[in-house]
Each structure stands twice: as structure tokens, then as C-alpha cells.
Image (cartoon, rainbow, N blue to C red; front, side, top):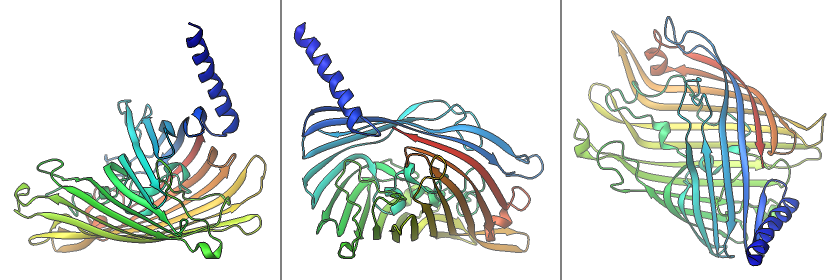
Length: 419
């Protein structure tokens, strides 16, 4: 009985000590090599959605308060060589982007084990980040535009234009996590970083998990110029949209992706579809006195990402390019540090829409996102006020001329906490 009491007191003491030495997590510490951090993160958002439709089709503006994410996490190691982490979240009462009710459920978002044989050779396995684009490696709690990338929330999507007979939105290929295994490491003290991964294949029809998805990503940081590397020596391997002036960063990344989406016998056209793609991106952030400018540029090309119909079946490609930046004033004004962030992105996918003699090609949209960010305690306590404006073009605009709006502007108030 006495032994049991001492064990309980020991765990309680470890929790108290862990809380004292960490600012955003509670910690259980067995010894210097064995410990676990626990925490809770949350996103709250009010959104004023623009009209989506015409006539009786969503022709009113919506006002939605929502818990966008409610997440518990654990991260730690059982030894210097074996690290682990896990994140579980639940949707809010309103759930969907337009406020339609969804069933509350707790779901594992990420979980994995990372074996650190040496900084240059590590292996991560589980439900982990897909290391193709920088977007997939970026923590959603560090985004300078909190409504995320490829903004098409509750509006028009590619279905019906690029995939009229075989529904397939090419943007869904860029998911953040999947079941898989990644070999990765830091070379020359982080000057070079690499990721080579194999994941579940995301076949749209036919036999599930029939093949494998392959991805690879390499990054370069000119550490000789004083820039800090974004090390992957962590359980999760995530990077940030901003480091809020804590370190100067310049990262150049290249990525490759390949998987089969349809087998030949699983389509009515007796055609297979094997997608592949590449990406190039650049991330820069450097502190100049009280000012911290941030810039990110990127291009993504997805080949054979979907089917579409013209006069015959065709395989279509998707191209995406984006630019975003933030200017942070790294001094307290009132209760926190203010920053202004802007994002532009362009998405274009092969497709066609015909109406009588009118023929329009390519599903396309442009998105402008603007956010005023106010960091009360870094990312641990943050408020954002902003808007997203999306304009559809070409086949997408023609297809929805009589059904949906070809331009939408949504406003939001966003609150984030991390512990």
C-alpha cells in the first residue's frame, strides 16, 4: 500500500514539475531519457459565409459559430532512440463549414513512432505527415491564414467539370496525413534534409489498398549564411508557417509524388489512371529589429490527377501556385503583437463545360486571403480577423452561371489556444 502511495505521489510530482518547466504542456518525466508531454489545443471561429447559390439554392448569407478543432495530444520518448506522439480531435456541434450539423466523434488525426538511429537516419511510421509539399508538413496551428490553403470551402468544386462521369476533385490528393512509413534525416547539421515515404494507395474505385503511394522531399537551408535549419529530428516532423522571429529561416524544398488512382478494369472507360506530381517551394523569415517579414512561394503540378470528358475521355492535369507573406511587429502593442498576413493562390485543372454552342475549358479559381493576426502569447493564444475572396473562372464559371455564384467573399473571427 505504501509503495502504491509513493508511486501516485511520484506521478503527481512529475506532473507538477513538468508543468513548471514547460509553458504549453504538462509533463510526466521518469528520467532524462523517458518522458511524455500532454496538452490540449483548440480553434474557435465565427464565419460570415457569402451567398453560394442563386434563386432557392443557398441564396442567403450564413452566420456560423463553430469549434473548428478540439485536440488532445501526447508527445515524448521511451528512450533517446524511440520517440512517439499522437493527436486526437473532435468536431464541434455545428461541424461543417456552412454550419450543417455533424455527428460529434473523437478521431485519431496523427499518431506514430519515430526511431532516431542517428540524426542522418530516422524512421517514422504510423498515421503520419505525407512529405510531398511544404503545406502537408506544416502544423495547422501555425498557419498565418487560419482558413487553410486551397480555399473552396462550401463553394464550387471540381466535381462536374473535371470529373463529370467519374467524380474526383484533384485537390483531395493533397492530404496532410496517411498511414505509412518515412525514412528521413538531417545531413550536415540540418543544411540538407530528406524524406522518402511509402503510404496507403488512395484508389478511388476498385480494390482498397491494392498498391502503394510513393513520396519524396528534399530541403536545403544555407546555414553558412546564418539561417537556422528546420530540423526533422522530432516525433512528428512538422514545420511552421511562421516562427514569430525566434529564428531566421530560409528553406528551399523539392518534392515528388506517385500513386495509382484507378485500375483499368475499375472504370467504365477501361482506362487506368496513375497520378504523379512534383513541387518546388521557398520559405523565408528573418527578423530586422522589431519587424519580422515572412514570405512563402510555391508551385505544385499534378499529372493525370483526374478524368474528364471533352469529345472523348481524357486524363487531366492540375497546377497550383501560391504566394503568401506576413509582416509581424515583434513588440507588444496593447495585449499582444500585431501582424498582417496575405495569401494568393491559383488553381487550374483540365476540364471542359459545354452549353449549346458555348465551350469553356479548364476549372480555375483565384483566392485572396487577408488576416490581421494578434499574438497574445505566440501561437498559444492568438486572435485573427480576416476574409477570403474566391473568384471562379473558365469552365467553372460557365458551369455555375445559372446555379451558383462565381465570386464569394467570406469573413471570419478566429481564436486559437494551445496548452
